[in-house]
Image 1 (cartoon, rainbow, N blue to C red):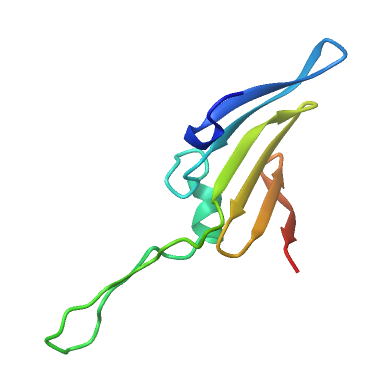
Image 2 (image 1 turned 120 degrees about the horizontal axis):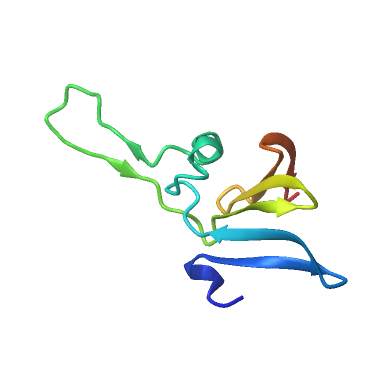
Length: 106
């Protein structure tokens, strides 16, 4: 597997058998496969000015140094999705597309 930061994929092998495959996605909030989960995990990326002031302003969301990524694939006949939010330092895991667990840094 090379260049994981530019999206990559791979296979998982055990005793000469392929038991899984995966794809790493570096922009999970923009990827069509992960959008259905990312909308709940990542904050809105822009705040609009709703005041009656003549001053126009906007706030853009900027990620912290943590890296956001998603991993989607199949392992031992189960579909899985993992999405990491670098800002919150949390990882959400879905098994067969249903929420399974959330890991968080304490």
